[in-house]
Structure formats: C-alpha cells, structure tokens
Image (tube, helix red, strand yellow):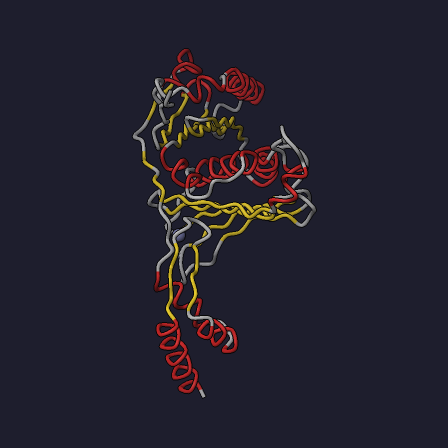
Length: 305
Ligand SMILES: [Zn+2]
C-alpha cells in the first residue's frame, strides 16, 4: 500500500477568543526527496525529520529574506555528529545528517530517537543569514536530555518574549508541526489571559499524531478541530519544496580554496568527484579541469602580490 504524502504547505491561523496565533506545517514530498537521496538508517532519518520539521516551523514565524538554518552539532560520543537543515525565504528546504554507522549499529535495534542517545552533549544553533550587508542573527543553546523538539522548546521559552508551544509528529506520510504563540494581552485581566493560554495548550495536547499525519485531513481541519468553539480564522497558505543550493560554480570556488599540494594530488589521481552532502549530487572534475583551476588559482594569487 502506498502512503498518501502530506502536502508541502504552511497554514497560519489565529484564534480570536484565545488571543493565540499559530501555524500548521506539513511536509511530505519535500522531505521524502531529501531522505531518499541518502538511505539513512531509520533512527537517523527520524531525528533529521524532526530537525527539518522544527526548521520550517521556526522559520515560518520569522520575517526574513535569506536563509534560516538549524544546526545540531554533537560534541559527545553519540553516533550522530551533525544535523543540518535550512530553508530559504522562498521555501527551498534541504537537510543532511552526518553519522558514524558503526556506532549506530552498536546501539542495536529499537534505538530511542533522543538527543542523549543519538547526539550526546553539544549545541543547537539557529542562524538567519540575510546576505552580505546584514548582520547574521544567531541563537545557540546546549543540547540537553530529551528530544530535539524539547531542546528547541526550552530555547524558545527562555529567549522569546511570548509564550509558545508546539506539537510535532512524523511518520510515513511526512512531518506535521502545529505551533501556537500567545499574543500580548490587551484586556489587562492577567488571570483570564493566563486561563486562555492554558486552555489553548491543553487543546494542542489533545491533538493526536494520527490526525496530524492523516493526509485525508486538510491543513485547516486541524485548527478547526481544536479551536472551533473559540473563533478560529485561517489565512493563506505558503508552500515548501526540496531545493539544494549546490552548484558547480560553488564547488569550483571551494576547490580553488584548497592548498596547492592537495590540488596537485587530485590531478595526479586523474581527477576527483565531489558529492554534495545535502542532495548527494556528484560533481566530477577531470584532471584537465583541475589543472585549469590550479592555473587560474596561481594567476589570481600572483595578482594579489
Ligand atoms: Zn546539493
């Protein structure tokens, strides 16, 4: 049986009666393409899926023009060394996981998809890169016990001004994240505002993973099911797609940055193949092409002196 994939879409919504705004994020084909390019073992695919879901959920709450990225870097003994996922403001998503296959195999079957088991100690960083002329934004937090989502949640609870909560699920149909944020209270009745927020978080918890991952339910069905009594409004959706930003031109620049002896080794070996971490595309460089690049590099360096 083929599983119906979720739509690659983001739906913003607002709950008037609860002073809450939120978003439903669903990723299907985009994530499948990214995972299919790698054949990751299941626990690695699972934690990378979680990282990609968080990336899109967090990025979709920001106004930016450039690239939002999430990086979880292990400094511990876990089998997963790095999880990297980024999304452009146009919705181009990519992601990869670096891992040690032997260490992962040593954990046996039924591996717990937690930060402690797969990564150990380390850091979780969020970056917004808006190009050369803008200061990049970066937030960093320590990787701690629990899931990757727990780490992200703790970070946002301590660094953001507004309370937020989210629920994430992933399975064969894709990834779904439902996120809510508390809007500033304008009534002055703090007790009532707190009560509203409590109610919103309880409703969010009541959402089941089955509902979140059921492609026969539309995105808007989720907030309607949760908040139909509290005046929910949905807004226009935006789309997400798989897109890598690698190119031969970028790799040429990387190769030109290599020290001369390494370039010469590659030429002596008859050329080299560079594989993109993110999308697994192979870029082949013949010895002749590398020799041209070496000559260009030499000429450029001569000009600098
Ligand atoms: Zn690529």
